[in-house]
Image (tube, rainbow, N blue to C red; front, side):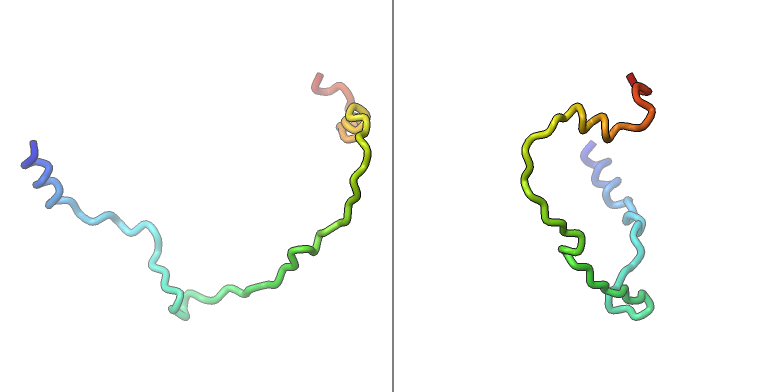
Length: 70
C-alpha cells in the first residue's frame, strides 16, 4: 500500500492554473483609477428620542395592502 502511494505521488501532475497570471508591474494589465470618497458624505446628525409606539411605527412602514400576509 505504501508503495502505491509513493508511485501515485511521483506520477501526479501539477495542478492547473486557475487564476490568470497577474503581475502588477505589467503595463498591459492597466491601472484602475483611485477615486476619492468621503467617509462622512452621508452623515446626518441624529438626536436621541423617547421610545415610540412600535405598533404604530410598524403600521406606518407596512405596505399599503394591510393584512396581505396575515
